[in-house]
Every structure is written in C-alpha cells, then in structure tokens.
Image (cartoon, rainbow, N blue to C red; front, side, top):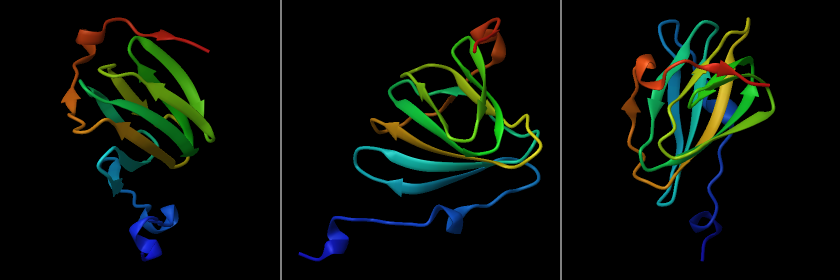
Length: 129
C-alpha cells in the first residue's frame, strides 16, 4: 500500500493567517475520530465563550500569551502550555498579550457541536494559578 494512505503531514506555518477583525480558525485535519484545528488570535481578540456538549478538547499554546477560561476558572497561559477542556465545559481563549497567539487543538469525539455561552450562564470566574 502507498505510504500516503497511512500518514498525513502538513506544516503549521503554511496555514497561519491573522485577520484584524476576528480570530481565524483553520481546520488542519478532519478525521473520523477527531478534529485538529489551529486558532490565530491577534492581541485583544478572543475565541468567545462556548462549549461542546459531547466533545472534550486539548489546547496547546504554540505562540503568544493570554488567558483561558474553563468552567468558572481563569488562568494565565503562555507558549508551550497545554490545557484540557472537559466535555460540555464553557471555555474561552483571550489574547491579552502584545504579540500574536497561535493555538493548536484536538477535539474529540465527533461530531463536535459548538454552543455559544453567555457569561451570566457561567457566573463569577475565579483566577487560578
């Protein structure tokens, strides 16, 4: 069998794209078992508060720094950190830094439904270390 039937590769740098009005979401791989996405977030932008009723997510911060909210917890994050988001947990990524932020993430299982959440649905958020 041809090797390409088993392995898929890409260069993350070839897919980086920023937009001045909103963060950019790129689906890098869409497999039967998971999505592998990249978010490009400029300073001051965010991936708004939302949840995935049937999917968990792992965020890996490649570049930049900012804050991530998961449930009622908020934490400062920086490049080379990873954050686990449980199934149905409200979450948000905010670029509070001075430079561009790149986040790669895996979502599973599929389908990964996207439900926006109003801040008042979460309640008071507490900063954690």
